[in-house]
Length: 113
Length: 112
Image 1 (cartoon, each protein chain N blue to C red):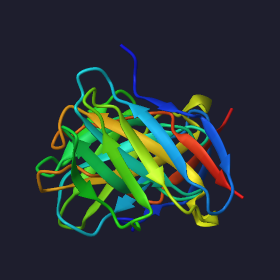
Image 2: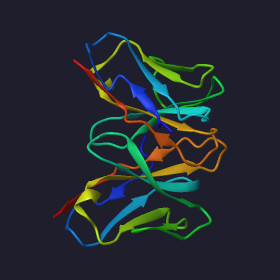
Image 3: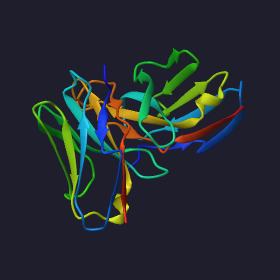
Image 4: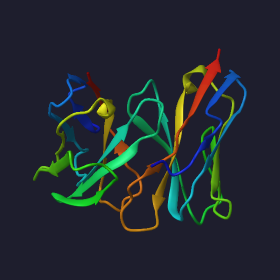
């Protein structure tokens, strides 16, 4: 079975632009979570979605938004990019929001210039 | 914000030696997990220990959990060069939602 997939692998944007990151969960997994990992730090929780509804949100500004589609894939959108948004964005999938083990994708490396 | 700290931040050992990493956290948890990350890419799940467990083994990995001290340790025995990576502990709260809170990580370098 395929693991969690994310696209694109790398992305370079300039300040003020908008970006959309995509994630496809493991087949059968209905919950998707997004994490931001700044260089040298551990990942920080951004969003969790289940059955197309937001089930949790971390401490991130409203410039960050996400959605989940009927096939359980998900998009993370970031508006008005700042230099500090440069990070590795990780997607994780699990069967449900309360399932203990989450499976992470390879991430999307976003660089904001 | 980060749940807690990992200690040490960096560790360099020779192949065959044991590596011990420690993790502290702040709030009550349902479980604690350890992940490995190679070269800033995706996280690989290593082992999960529940709040009512004190010790767990998986291959060359041994994890302990002390909920009274809010701390955990990961021991990698007989290390190999391929174990070179960053290791993160992550806690899941004792609520229905398992959003993980990660520590700051330990960078392990195993010299061949």
